[in-house]
Length: 122
Image (cartoon, rainbow, N blue to C red; front, side, top):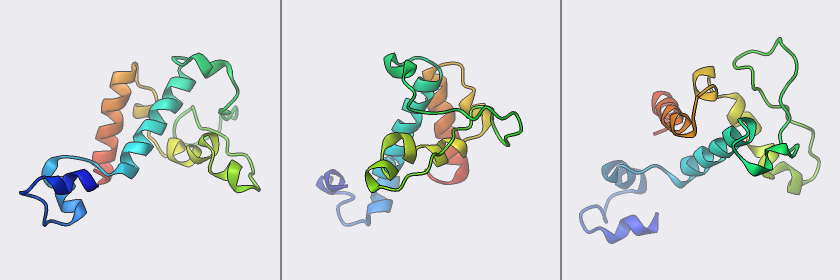
C-alpha cells in the first residue's frame, strides 16, 4: 500500500508490518469482505438487483454448513471464471452459519470481521 509509506514512523517497515502497526487490512481482504457484503445483500433482498438470477442457491437439503450455499456453474472462458458471480462462490460457501444468517448488514460486517480475525486472516 503506497499511502502507508507517507507516514514517517512506519516508512521503513515491510508492508504487512506497516498494516498491522496502522490497524489496516490488506487490499485483498477488503475486496473479499466487500464481495461477501454484496452477496449478503443479494441473498437477503436488500439490493435492487436481487430479483436477477446472478447467484443460485443450492436447493438440496443435504448440504453441509449453512443453508444458503451457492452453486458454482462450469466456466470455460476466463471472462466467466473471473466474474463476480463465479469468484464469490467458494468464499461465501466457506463462511459459517452464524455469519451468513446475520440479521442486518451492520451485524454481517461485524460477524465477518470476527470470522476473519478468528481464522487469522486479519
